[in-house]
Amino acid sequence: MATVYRTTMKPTKLELLTDWLPRQSWYAGGAEAPDLSRAGGFRLDDPEGAVGIEFMVAVDAAGPEPVAYLVPLSYRGAPLEGAPDEALIGTSEHGVLGTRWIYDGVHDPVLMGQLHALLRGEATPQQQSVSDTPDPTVTVHGTTLGTGAGPDAGAEAAAGAEVHVHRVLAVAETSEESAACVIAGWTWPNGMAARGVFATVTPG
Image (spheres, rainbow, N blue to C red):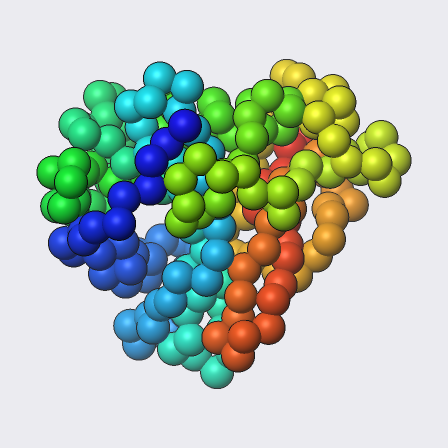
């Protein structure tokens, strides 16, 4: 399983995202720079142990109402071959691992492969900031198979499916428009906990 290091990153993830987020088509903020805080998320393990995978929620408090963004991040020790230019969020110096290339994970086949595996019940979500610790608050729901959630629902719904990552999060306990979905949580700046749909899958 992946190891979460207690060390520094220069620039930090939030510093990189402060520059990167406003340039995205789905950014919901105004002309002012975002005021970001790390608000939640989870990790998945790369079976090969080479790529770090994190689903980070960053909350922007710059506007009149806070906005929660989901940014899937992949961390690599070398550039991702064949990735489009817009896939790279930036590079950062990790206190233990050295230079890390940080990508918008929707463009990284390892991250997306593990997200599919999660929906099939073949991957276990891990706590965001603790090594080797499953996160039971992250759940897979299969709405087409009734209200029960679990690996079987995910496996059937995810077979031959297209997965959509939700960039701007809304509070919800399930998705009525999807065959299956990943539900996880974050915390608003006022300390209130929230849960919403991180990813949905539609049958192929």
